[in-house]
Amino acid sequence: MNPYERVKRTDTDLYRIGKWIWIPVIIAGILFAQKGVDFISGIPFFRCRFRSVTGFPCPGCGGTHAVTALFKGRFLESLKEHAAVPYMVLAYLHFMGLYFTRAHITKTIDSKPVMIRYYAYGLVIVIFLQWFVKLGLMLILMFT
Amino acid sequence: MSKIYCLNCGNEMEADTKFCPSCGAANTQYAAAVEAVEATFNGTAESNVTPGSISQDPVPAPAPVPDIDAGAGQNPGTETPYYTQQTEPAPAQFTPTPVPQPQYQGSYSDPYGQGYQQASYGQGQPGEEGGSKALAIVSLVLGIVSLVCCCWAFGFLGVLFSAASVVCGIIALAKHQAGRGMAIGGVICGGVALLLALIMTIVSLTMDKSWAEDYLEENYPDIYEQIEDSF
Image (cartoon, rainbow over all chains, first blue to last red; front, side, top):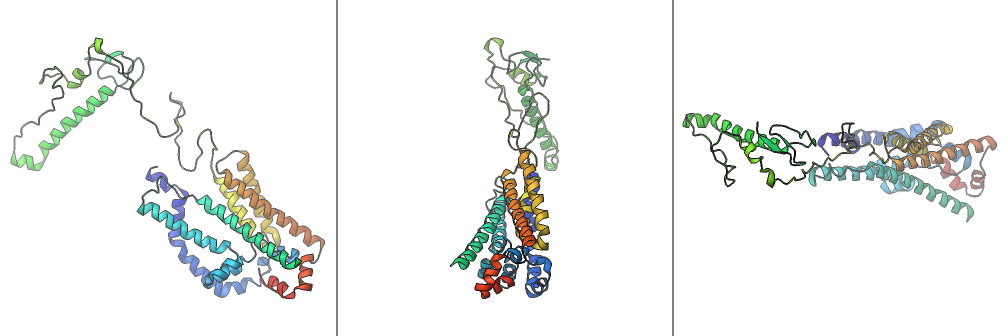
């Protein structure tokens, strides 16, 4: 693969974005954890309709708390609230490290692109897994 | 013009012919000889025009021409280009040798000018999954978003994103486009989100409060309060 084709690749585009995206993300996350979470909690738009009508959590329940806990430095609490949030942080760090290693240390990035889709598959699995765990725990609480 | 013989079919042809008129094979003898001659004379010319050589030796001795014909029984110093001498074997001793064809790395679909398809990243190979991965990627992304946000905006966002995800995924699968795994993932995520949105709609239309919520509020008020607070 020539360098021109590497430029057109998705992993190269994401690596370029990822080199700088952490700055606005951290700033926005800290602001959200300090002020934004109190603001949006009062907006019905963001309330979980599924939980309010069925009593069961939806696959996205706990995401806001997980983001808040993450940007307050409580990683384990974030993992407990919604595992997909810390997973995305770890996936970002893994992707950046892997691309950097292949591009600058082993020099194999042209022949071995970083497969983005596996991170997406992992995200889907984590979302479903944490949802099933929450549903299971809730059912155990209800019927024991 | 001297005659040479094609290394592929043995046909007799002019020495400066680029392709054999009989079989169409490239005249590698001519190309190699031209390159060798050009390299020889270019090297001599460059050595003559260097400033150092001009100032120190105004009349440089001619560069020695490589004696390619040494040992071949040829007369060195003849004015005939050496490649014609070298590539003109005796017909009795001629044995056609197959010319190794260069290995083309892309997908060379038609060797007779019908056009070729160059392999590139993100596009399918002929005979395999073809086309763009865009629909599959859109399906997977929308599926994940719909899964996480299926409860926002009273379920409206969930229905919108999940329906789009399922449609994109099914189209990608039906057209056998690239990214089959992503399309399947998008259909699964979008389908689950759509199912949740439907359940949400049905339950909200049929009852004011869910049985699970009633049960929790009655038996586990502390858990009920925690669930109410979480979102």
